[in-house]
Structures are given as C-alpha cells and as structure tokens.
Length: 174
Image (tube, rainbow, N blue to C red; front, side):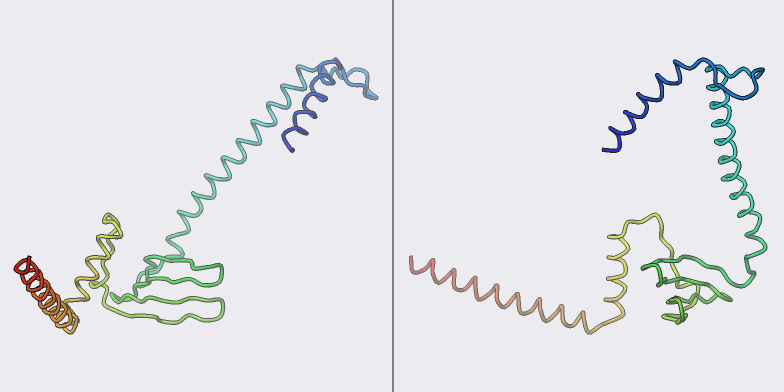
C-alpha cells in the first residue's frame, strides 16, 4: 500500500517541478530555476550524508579513546550474555580469579567462582566438540557413572546371550 502512495506522489511532484521554471517570490531579482534547485537539493543531501559519516566515525574514535579511562588494571569483563532486557550473565576476572555473575536491575549475585587458568575460551571449536569435551571431563570426574555404564553393558551382554541361545534353540527345532 505504501509503495503505491509513494509512486503516486512522485508522479504528481515531478511533472509539477518540471513545469515550473521559476518560483514566485516577493524579490524579483532572485533567479530560482529547476536546475539550481536540484543542485541545491543534491548538495544538501551530500552534506547530510557527510555529517552522518563523521558522527559515526567520531563516536567510534571517542569510544576507543575513552576505553583507557574506563578500563581497570585488576578487573576485566570477558563476556556478557543478555538473557532479556533486565537479566545478564557476565564472566569477570579479578586478580586471576574468574567470577560468573548474574546481574539484574536490583541485584548482582555470584553464580560461580574459579581460578582464571580453569577458564578455557575456545572460540574456534564448534559447539558439539565443546559439548563432547565437557561431557567426557564430567564423566571422568564422576566415577559412579562409569560403574553404571559397566552394569548397563553387562546387562546388555547377558540379554544378547539369552537372545543368541533362543535363536540357537529355534534353529535346532527347525
């Protein structure tokens, strides 16, 4: 719908601009032709774009320069995960210890704390690889899972033996 209206407006404005060679003003000495008006429009658009570009790069420049004033010698924010507009989870290192913080509008709570050397940031690997790595490390730490896996394997081997015996009995009968 909006496209139809914009095309209609353009088709009404362009012929009007082309048909008017000069504007009527109280001062007769000023010459406003269509060419000069279009050139002024293009110049104004170019100036506007230049101002926007300078504002973007100026903001980046100021942000880079202000980092050294805001940064700390002993604290470093490693990563921040925004769960929604009011809740964040942040990883912060302070004096070679890493903290996982839960941050809301009203509170900051320490979720976990460990030595910075234990913090491994693997950006290159895929999520599946990291998940398998964490799974195997967890299984190594928890030996009762190994026992459970052994018992499951024993039960499955017994079940397979029973199935094999039944198949052998059925073949003998045939």
